[in-house]
Image: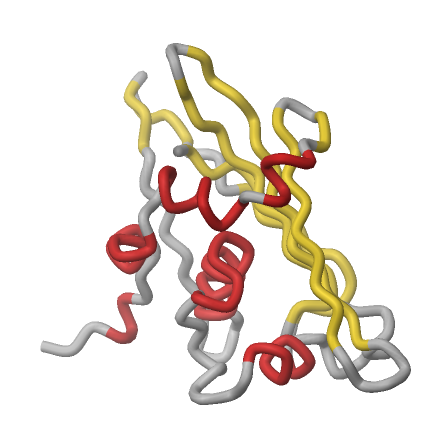
Length: 165
């Protein structure tokens, strides 16, 4: 699985649409498949990692600001405070994955908004090679377990700031 792009819309401290290129670079002809994110404290590094895990795992994602909040409340709190809750927020992750000898481009889009009664409506849509796939969308939780099992996700997406010696 090779991450290519993360797109955030009104997610936490990221207002509007923000796009992050995660495509691995090449150095001296060799792939450099590790992406490091650096910045000042409070700059949004942990929020980026949370976004990747949230788009992939939904209510199971170990997001840093969730604590013991119910999932719906966490999603409400994750809508940028400068926008209307009814406008909602969204996270889209595109990645390449090879299966049966063929490489495919997947896009997972997790979006949510608050309705007039204060309830959160969440949608997960998955596209494969540019085409929306209803089966993948409906079964995303099962498929992501095959791509990156939840139990090892923390080894793939980790915040070095949280490492204790």
